[in-house]
Image 1 (spheres, rainbow, N blue to C red):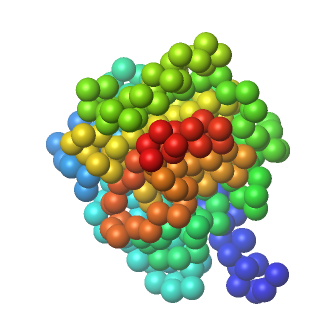
Image 2 (image 1 turned 90 degrees about the horizontal axis):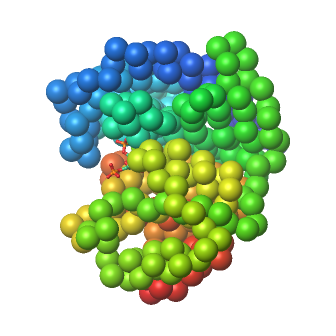
Image 3 (image 1 turned 60 degrees about the vertical axis):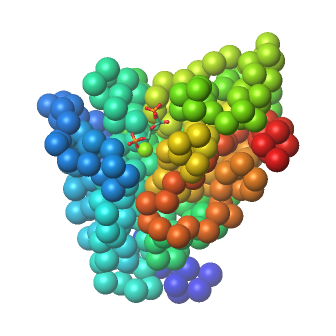
Length: 291
Ligand code: AHM
Ligand code: MG
């Protein structure tokens, strides 16, 4: 390993420690921040007070790590450039599924650590992960070809699975967007999936919760292209790439409809991407139908 690789490994460790170490603080800070903030994110969505607060907290902590050159998030238009040109870039969705704050349902934090300036393709990811604010705060982390799962308490990170792999026999599916807005070929694929009596519907309105069901039970999650949104809803840098990287590392597949999401070349920081992730055979079948 070269000195630069070694340095990068330490920076990756520190970024992961920072995000994992902030998770329960973020969870506690949701109380009292469930209202809308009277502001929009760069994708034109209304921000909750908690979105803005969690982004500021992570921006401060991550951008002050030596060896991080950029912090970018779904909640801010520009990257924060931290000066170290040889450093790593960190892209974050501070609170994925924050519309679930109102109903007090599951949410997450998503992160990707890239060895290129953002916007970057998913092939530049050196690690990716998510925090799930479920009944227990957990972290799924993809790094060095393996996915690991941790339980996070206020002062501890406990490894609970050192090699998470998508189960071979898929059990769950969940698809976002309004049904009347789906393209006809995507709808045809959904009808096929629904007619498979070994699969059950699981959809909770937070990608992290829904993709975590797929990681746990096997299956497919998609937020597809829509009639009035040809690139779907989810953002490539902050949601698509890290989720695709983690699911592929766990032995599954990702697709934007025709190819792995990791092969999509970004034009802009806040580009969207049609997102489909899950077991290989389901993603292959989806790509055949969408062709
Ligand atoms: P967010 O990151 O602003 O919360 O938006 C992303 C969320 C995903 O977690 C979820 O899959 C999707 O938006 C749900 O969208 P919709 O409310 O259109 O079903
Ligand atoms: Mg999100």
